Length: 462
Image (tube, rainbow, N blue to C red):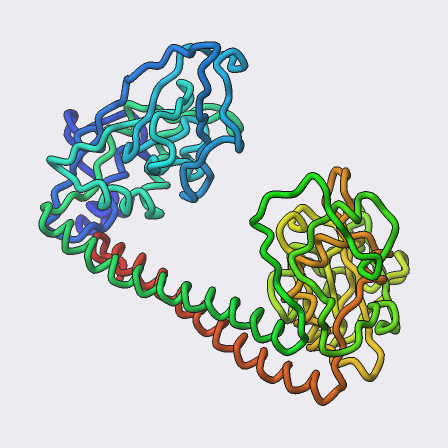
């Protein structure tokens, strides 16, 4: 029998004191074997947070805020938009939470459902499926604890402390509180926080500049076209006087809509979209159960989830030529304009993009090609800048999923300058969009740098 060298054998052996065990599991035993920076004391989480046991017995005639926690560390938010009366809440014995507390979902903590209670949720209520804690500020600064909970390692601890069937795993609180995390001295915590915040503030400034550019783009497009932005903050009047010349169609729903813009003083002709398009075509979804339609696909198939950028250069899903032929899908060439016509995203935006590759589309999109005298980028910029106006005038109401009425969209009129004017405004808007993209890239880079620097200060991950 061949013996393993002693120095190798000890790499696979781990001595653990009985008093240090939080539970009898390999995951728990090995949880401290993350490569932490030397010199940081490892503290059980139970020494850093104290369980909140402030109970609230609900009253029928009192209104309450309820809480939900988004997955993957995306925050603690109010459940629903409205307060709920106690009489409409089944469980009468609940817990009251306060700003600054750490809170997590027993069921979804393994998926990052934890965070710090924001000021707007002061006094909100939770059921026993949520665990809330006060942070022990004598040992750890709340902001430092908040940063620790945002690391991948902390999410892994929550996964290790969860037990039960795959769909209903709950956090074992005792195991969770027994896990140990690095806790530098408070002065080092403060130094790490300040360094983190320097980059975060720079990222926030970049975002503010990017948002300002959006306002500049809208302002310059309005000035160029003569479109006036209206103040819609005033309350609606019971009676309204409408001029006959401003009627586009006889419809009560249409007349009740309150527009965000006025095109009455447009500097150039108003032309309906149907006069500008050569083609206007939808798509479809090949059957998901037909593997030959998807497996090994090389043809881009665009759906609303791909419509997040100005230029479409790839798609999440690919289909085969068999799927195209059997489903009679059109492969639209590079330079095709795509718009989302059916999706929940239409509640707040109207995504419009232009392709840089050949694509097929699903049934929620429309593909458009334009007449030669229309600059494609002018058309795209116009629809993107005045998307709120399109949503106001072309959205279908009273439907389960938000959608754009194709007939009303084709009847929608845009301001059309001569080609020289189109080229002029396109050049200016393109310059502003390039600056905006650069700022957004800087913002994301700074956020990533801040997170990476924080983790590098705690873990040996360099």
